[in-house]
Length: 278
Figure (cartoon, rainbow, N blue to C red):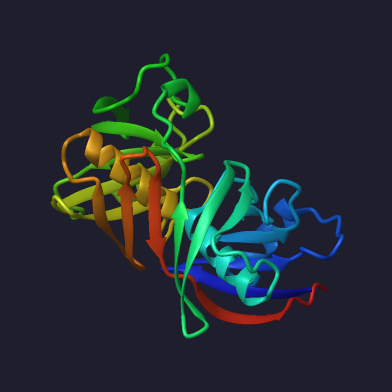
């Protein structure tokens, strides 16, 4: 089975090009095998390129634990670069179908090479029952939750997938490896949640550490950067356009006046190969 490995700021994915291949595969099981860092190829997730009846192409994404999230911002940038470079989709902008809906992506092409991808991530979902968060319909902004015996003030946002955003003064005192999974599986979130810890550096910059639902700590999370920007604006901490510093690099996020969130960042090839399944 041929594959290609790509990453967005170190958030890495195994890609399978099944746009023209009819295969009946158990993708959740395959994701767990391929993404294993010791016994597989290694990756935060498995991304599958498929045809679409409503857009130019369709992306399915699976976490390393086999779960299927609605969307992944870093994966979709890599997806867009790959389908363009391979001639599968030559529209620019292009439309990609995901479980979170159809998204529009614009490619920054210089001298024939894709330098970056700008994604219209759509409108953020703030209604609690649609994120989902237990407790009604009202937006969840600067509310309190308890995990591991500590109280945290959080804001909940969905970018097609749920995010719990917590603002911190610094990361040194944060028990990230324990607090992250405890909040991910907190009973407030019936479908679990991604967890972002945010340090605001200035009105136009912030630094993020993320615990991804189904994947754990990763070097970057595109939807998390988007959700965190929305949360920062709602809490009057930043302007609507910010640079988000992640362990793997920077993303530029803008919550536009049209209520859409726009994410701009790189998409990088790592290597390609053949999976020899014994």
